[in-house]
Length: 112
Length: 113
Image (cartoon, rainbow over all chains, first blue to last red; front, top):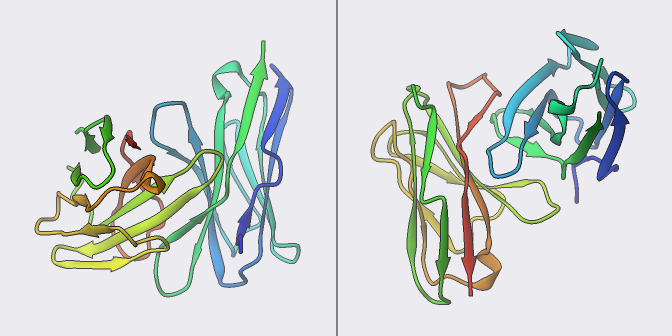
């Protein structure tokens, strides 16, 4: 049973436009959400996070939105750059332990 | 400050062989984790440790063992390798309880044939 779902395996956008990556979760115990970026042959790197007490967190070109009632979060990248081309993983954590549950990832391609 | 390092980068094993994947972090993090990533899939937690001498199973622990004798090192042992263990293995660490952000190593690509 997938508790964190990224339903789009891939996304292609033009340089300078907005990239929107989506993530849905099913476990109501999740109260912290993260996005990781992964280039080929490298480990995932932490990008941005949001706590369930917020509905938006911004860091430069990256903004994460959280809709708790819909159990949905999204990552907005504006403007998109070719260097943003990577696999993006959504992850969620919560409860008395601090383990993370990951989605399957979305491959973002930003075309020059 | 090297962060999380993993060795080897690549390895091919024959069915039934054993090996140890090494993981070291120099950030003085208490928590360490082992994940595997299969093609087209997310990361699945194998084992984790909340400090030296303390380990616990994750989602997919069968066929693996871990130990944590120091804060810095968290080796993953594969006994009797099977083709189903062909995967990319990532080690990660985080500072402490209450901190979700994990820092990952570069991964070990393992093929069992």
